[in-house]
Length: 402
Image (cartoon, rainbow, N blue to C red; front, side, top):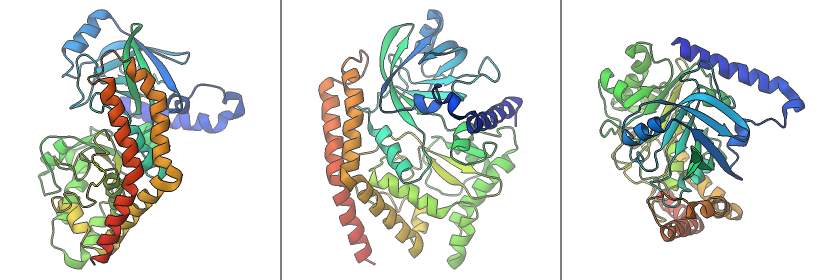
């Protein structure tokens, strides 16, 4: 690990210790929990040199950092770093941003966070898909980033509505009960990948290390290569056990089931191959998936629960094992019943829209009209009312077909 990574892990552990011992005396202090409170619309202010702001907009397709001051809720952090972020969401008029609080000041944090992602919401005219999707993941006991909404001001000029998204990093791992010094990888897009065998170098490109980056490729990516070698190996009845050494298969099918209930077009079984997740590994333990970037969920009400299932080598083989197939269908049913219980999903979407929509109407740079926003929200509400029935019917049909 680099000195900077060691410092970040130490800060995470120290913040956890302080949180456990501070007691009621600090209950009123601002915390990351307050920042990610999605019951309110926040105000976040950035202060950056106009020359740097112009350069950030001109070079929005690059990842150049610039110094910035960050102000929220009476808390101010000076000389943090800011850069453009994202893939399809990169935008000059309304840039998606990453705040790196210790980029220029070693050890500096913001409410215990070392990073914070600002989602510009330009790829989702409802602005609600990702927040609603992550809430369902968390509701089914799957670690997922917290999100809230904010009005963003840069140099006191309103830039529109953004989502505050918890970065998946050492602090996230610690909050999720994982070792903050363990292995973390982001699945990045460098061409379509469907779980087939690749070289060690190829896996290093597909799964970008977010912790322990200076370790050798064989240490970092060797277990990933072995995972997909076993996935594609014709090992008969031993396949489940052999693959299970490298991947928590129950958690994997749970993750995919939640994505399929949400009609995810760009996830593990995505239209462009495996996409939009992190993988975590503790030492020699199996990998587990963490969801990321869910703005392509809620694609259609009748979205088939086995969409592109035969294209993915890992999922295709998993579904030949009765216990994993049963787990997959069970989780789909759990999603359907959880979403329909008391109209939970519809109520949550309506609640989020009530918080965000008034500010969306005043957003001067959103790439869609107010009418398009209203129509997108109306579709999400209809999805929430009807998706559970569609999924339950599909699950029943899949069980009957065996």
